[in-house]
Length: 286
Image (cartoon, rainbow, N blue to C red; front, side, top):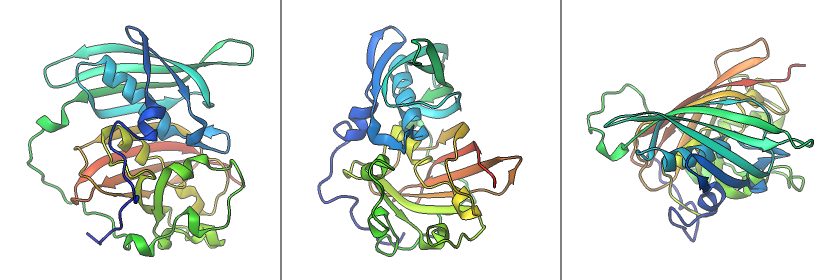
């Protein structure tokens, strides 16, 4: 693996970072949780889908007898906004090695009506109990060393409030996937980056749910602009990540009918494939 700099000069530990505080849910009753969605994880006015998935993932980790997400599929029904939400969970089945549950996130509209924002179905288990046998043809993405990649601090000064989430991430993008930022998109539909949290907190299974949805959309490298809202996102967590920055690779092979897929792989500092995802997203054409 290429040598990488530390994600932050001062590191926070798992359980003591802004990500942990902003995804912490309060149990109101069995299966019912409250949380105020933080504006710190927004792009313009949209709350990031990976952050939302981590919130739901944390509620399910509390509700189910197993604590590690193995697979979680989310349908994004309406756009979420910062502020109070209610998460309701339901245990579908519990077994010795896997538990399955579902969860929905609700907010209130301007008329006071409850609106469902997201619905997920997930299976949880114990990542530490998995066997060590690995047989794979997958290879880590070829990304230049971190000091040769570019972050938000290397670009123009952003408009205030345009991307609050950028301040909470350590994101260093592969220059080969940054043609869109120079007005010269490659057309290849690829995005690659080093990823971490800005406060240096190491990755865990819940933060992997954020990592798969934290890079700029591959639509940018296809020559498209604007918001690319997620319709559905499925994440597979394969093992507990080792300490250190992650490498994330996302590809799109097919844009048709105003929708595209994004396939993501997340690799840890030990060269292990720790998470995979696929999402369907809507794009604005023309």
